[in-house]
Amino acid sequence: MKNFTLKILSSILKRLARWTIAKYRPSIVGVTGNVGKTSTKTAVARILGAERRVRTASKNFNNELGLPTTIIGDFKNTDGAFFWLKVIGKGIGQLIVKNSRYPEMLVLEYGVDRPNDMNYLLEVARPEIGVITAIGETPVHVEFFDGPEGIAREKSKLIAQLPSTGFAILNADDKHVEFFKEQTRGHVITYGFAKGADVRITSFANTIDRNGENGFVSFKINYGGSMVPVKIEGVLGKSAAYAGAAGAATGLIFGMNLLKIAESLRGYQNPPGRETVIPGIRDSLIIDDSYNASPQATEEALLTLKDITAKRKIAVLGDMLELGRYTMEAHQKIGKIASQSAGILIAVGSRAKFMAEEAVKAGMPKRNVFSFENLGDAAQVLKTMVKKGDVILVKGSQSVRTEKITKDIMRDPMEAEKLLVRQSPVWLAKPGMYD
Image (cartoon, rainbow, N blue to C red; front, side, top):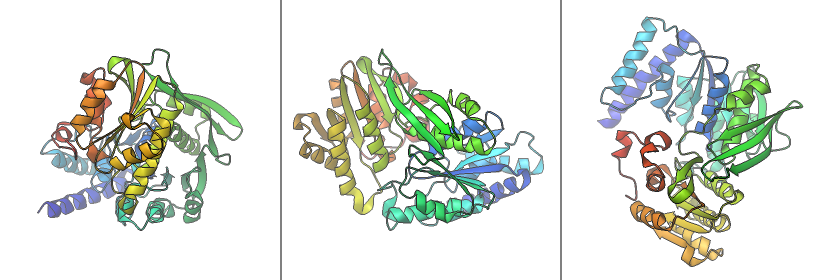
């Protein structure tokens, strides 16, 4: 019965979204990839929003229900029994009476979990500009495909449908970039740290301020012989730089200059749970990356931890899910990287124990490695060991709910609703895998 209801609801939303696009004809930017989709979507919308009326989802709306919902309206509060009736009513209403405030541009996130997911989303909305962030060596959801190449093929459908006048914005640092170039008729713009990138990131640095209460990234965006410096507060890691560069590439397509793009990024903030910086107990600092975890994203987060200067570094890592036959190998690789990036490792989950075992094999002292099957136990042990000047990375797949650990060690837990992921009453009522 539930599946039948879901099918009817998705069909209604799909039709309303398509009719809405036909009526209002907004320009559409589509973002997909396995790492950094939401951060990139947010940066693109912020940059384009400096000159145009833009809408992007305030939540992770990237599936058969979320994508058409974003097209229909800007819904902040998604709780309540009558939410979907509200969405349907909004959709019908603005088809009957013209909405003068409907956005000129939509920045949509296209999420793919299984084969042919992209086909359905493209039936709802076909973008003129497609952004592919990164796939990675062992991407999340790989257990449902024939390997990373299968996911790359599915994601590439976003740019394969672009018209010859469209633009494909591709991550120059991803190993699949040449494959993606072959899949599109549109103009290709690349971004990243690679020397050949059209929009290139240089002079990147992670910095923690002197009092140890905040952090920021700084970098330069280079294009066509021009360069602008960018500084983004409250975040660490290269994900913000990648998001900014992808957003810059999109802005350039619409005629914005680099200076205006840099000004637009000045107030940009990573969405919660994406390497955001939060003050912790006993004057510690938390790198909260608890939204989700793929092997590539986890490796990048650990390299961020390695890159910064701190009295002591603690990595709290939960399971990485949906990796299928790659599960053990991927967790062992992360354990080895953790041994080189942190002084203490706290692993949470039945799969994360492979990280703990490999970290010890790689040379991390056994007394500094902890493995738990219960999230609460991990949080309690962590709370007892945190000291002034510690930097703590917290990361895990969505179902592990490592944001609960972040909340336990935040200086001000009352800020959780604003700073952490999954803080709505519906999410808070759902137990995690290891509660």
